[in-house]
View (cartoon, rainbow, N blue to C red):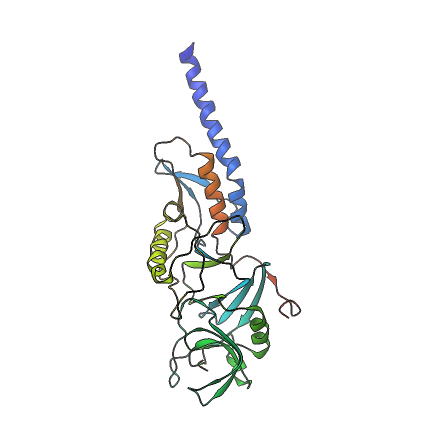
Length: 306
């Protein structure tokens, strides 16, 4: 009698596991859909002991800021975006450094913070050129506008400065009024492993001295590229005010895999609810949302070196 009942019980047990996983991971699948991922992304079992979620190629190692905004600069497209804590996003055009100019240099990639702000500043290196709404972040490199308008022809098209990020006078005024000292600025050339997120009241964050962050970020970046991110990275790091002028590395040069190992089950038949809840929260935190439809900051909301 008992032997006859064993097989049906085993079948019911495994059906129960399948139903449990499908039900629990529904929020994760919704997160994927929100990030414009494929609708058929699901949780699968790999090597009998690792759960994966398909197409996580947009995953990035996220550092967090308590500031009200941050800026992402894409040198490849010559564009930038200011992300505000209220979910609004302001897109603007830039023209970066051109090393072919006399005393010119490429704008450096990296994670920086705004170090100085001045409504007007004269460049001592370039014939006292007047720079408007100066926002410096990398030694003598920063955002600014010019009093003339001929450089408008290069905005959003190609590099034309001696190293700084030129922006229009209209955009410079809006951005200047929004950013503060310490606002994060991430500059990349299309490939990067970092992203920036806003702090939340219900989340704990860790601050590291800036001098040890490059090594820590390299470790986290390698975990991301190897597919071990959720297994090896657990700390939510706060971007401090002590980020040096030279900045921090933003990764790049490698491809983020479509799949990440999410839960190492070891010898357990099924991971605990705590494990799954943690993973669900982590996935929702770390997506690079650059492709998600964004609200725009309207004019009322928004208010070099050369």
